[in-house]
Every structure is written in C-alpha cells, then in structure tokens.
Image (cartoon, rainbow, N blue to C red; front, side, top):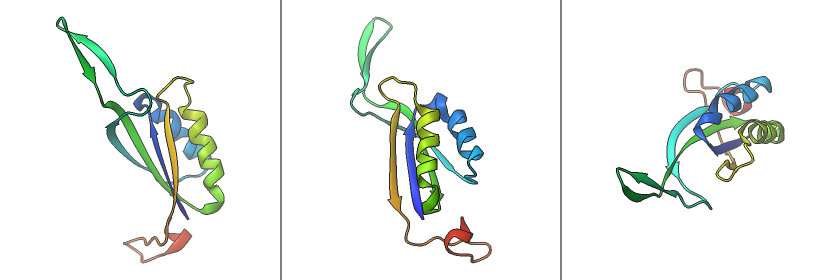
Length: 112
C-alpha cells in the first residue's frame, strides 16, 4: 500500500478527482494549503502599493492505494493537473505500513 500526496493548483481539483474516479480510486482527502516552489511567489499591486505574495494557494490531495495502482494514479494525477505552466505541483509517494477501517476492523487492502 502507498500514500499518494499531490500538491496541485486549486482549479485543477475537479479534473483530478474525475481522473481518479475513472481508474477506481474510491476515496481521497483534500486540504486547502499554501506554499511555494521554484516560482517563490510573486509581486502584486494593491491600492498603489506593491507587495510580495510568498505563499500561493494550493490544494493537497491524499489517496491511499494498493501498490499495483500507484503508476495509474500518478499518470491520472499528472495528466489531469498538468497545465504546462510553472507551479503545476508535485506528487509524492510514501509507503503505508498498516491501515485499518475503524468501523469494521478490516486491515490491509480490504480497508482501502
């Protein structure tokens, strides 16, 4: 089992959710976050004053998936979230040691 974490632009969330549903990912967790990568924010003009926006709004998507689905999930997220512009985001894959469904006590892939 793996945890897929993707940081994407907020307006790409619906596209990513649909792409994941199409390949059978049953559940995701979505969090609104702020951050920056290589673009390091940008400057804006507000009421005549220039200021730096250090942290840009992003969306963090987390999905626990069976190991055999990892490449499909990565391809789906990348395809749906890619705008071709800087700041499209990142995808992280981390191992999951154990998972348990609280209601039934199921463990492993059955709990996903």
